[in-house]
Length: 232
Ligand SMILES: *Cc1c(COP(=O)(O)O)cnc(C)c1O
Image 1 (spheres, protein in one colour):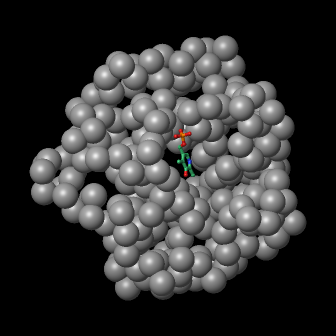
Image 2: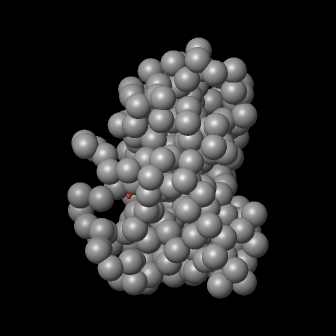
Image 3: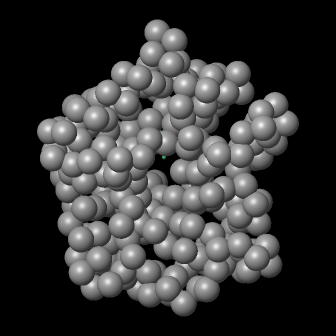
């Protein structure tokens, strides 16, 4: 299957899941995860209608975005950082990304705010929440979330838009459902309290339909568009 066919199929599945959940598919954005994917394929995806690309490494993204901008005059495309971010790369991340989905500590938020201020940018962010208690996973634990959101609300150059989560991997997408419904529940309660967490980034190739059923507004899909990655 070519990229444009794969993309049409993913888009169709998104639409079908939205209909089933009685949701408007306009409220579900597709982030094409292009980590490790070569530029020609990325350009093909953009020509086929992709407008948001997700990268998980700052270094890789920097080179790719620069090459992409040299080769295309496409200024409509937005890049999102979906992977763990180290503080020493915060400055570059602010230069490169429209949305940083992986903010999970006060230190990192402060560093991003500082660089955004210097750059005269209001940096859009999501806070990544860890719901699995797996120590290796990134993301802030639920018990510390409100405290972090309160700190962020005082950071004038950060624009908090929502929450992101990566559940543990299961072959059976049904097993991820409790994580998605949990994040939706947390976000709804926060919205009731006035926190601006309207975006919910959840769902990947294996489980984006389940995530949409549970309220995802942003799915991050790599393999189902670009095929299997050789490395991660
Ligand atoms: C790689 C990655 C994805 C995409 O995974 P696929 O299974 O290839 O769709 C989504 N989100 C994050 C954070 C990733 O690192």
